[in-house]
Length: 315
Image 1: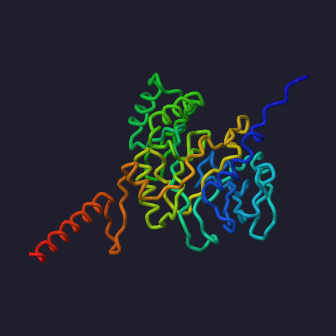
Image 2 (image 1 turned 60 degrees about the vertical axis):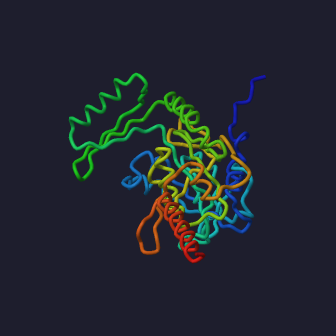
Image 3 (image 1 turned 60 degrees about the horizontal axis):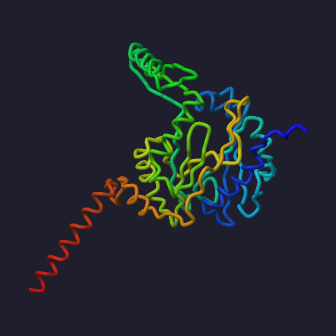
């Protein structure tokens, strides 16, 4: 009797629900999702107008209390409450994203920051060059690097005349870089929730009472520390959720999954900043910016002045 083919959905089918639950979603929270076709993302997200027409982005929502617990059964709702079977669209090439932070409606302000997070993409090598000579030199350096394994190159030119080079690494090379990243940052990410994607990792520090005003400065500091995607900083950022396939290559779908669930107790932003020695730059009421380290130094100076004043009065 022939063995049944391996079905990743059986092993990881509950990861979407458990991931959303782990983020601290409450019963009445209305969750907001985006379905974006990977054909659009495979081209230039901002310029692939034909792909946008053929594969329109779908904005969907559903309250957490009515969310199905397995990906195979998950149905989300359109603006007019029409149900959409998510896995069906995923298998047809749509990537499944969710807004991580909490807001009641698409147009209203956010209520809380559920997590701080980073996107570690180990697949792409991307540079811009003012001259063709520099471009060719960079390509030559990559091709002669014995550690690199490149599957494809693409070259484009922007409206300023700069050359943009994008190299895609082989799956074997990405797998090696994944292991290297985890080993290098083991102490810093030991308690985090880690979602494995085809090209790397999404790493989450689930928050308790996350401050909206501190969210962006900490995002920027995390991206700098881990050399991750510097664009992943806005409160409205939607991320791929686990329990569904990455379909940029339909012939080789990759199941996005939770590799590590992390600790039970959520982080405070203060703990995160201190434990990782981050230096976020916060905005002050006057619109100026002050780093966390300068903030601490000022507080210490004020305390010293207070002690000195009290000492003078005591005399």
